[in-house]
Length: 114
Image (cartoon, rainbow, N blue to C red; front, side, top):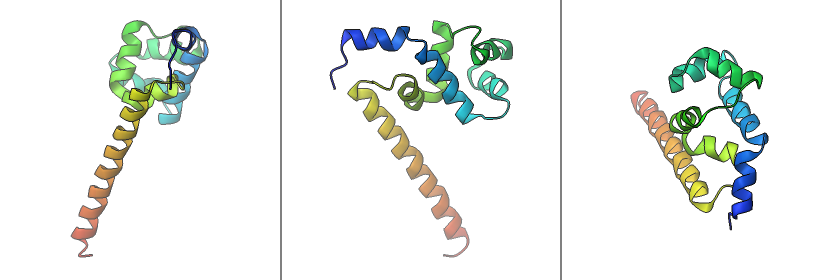
């Protein structure tokens, strides 16, 4: 996929970007969203509530903390026209999570003598 300069600018400047960030964290934490996100990224609850209410947008620091906390899945949600390297990072992250879940289930089965 060719991620043109125009696409990059539209993705970053669009109101849809903060809206998609809010949708991502609300889906992850449907209850007490601000409290959970605040705990995950280390910013005050008040700041996160302002994002959720649409009163403010995340600063560069806030966006960076969101990316660090939620990884490629967050970036894919915020920038749906992502470059190929991000698609690959998201796919690998999801594979790793599924393999970890598979190991946990196998350990439980082994403990039950299956």
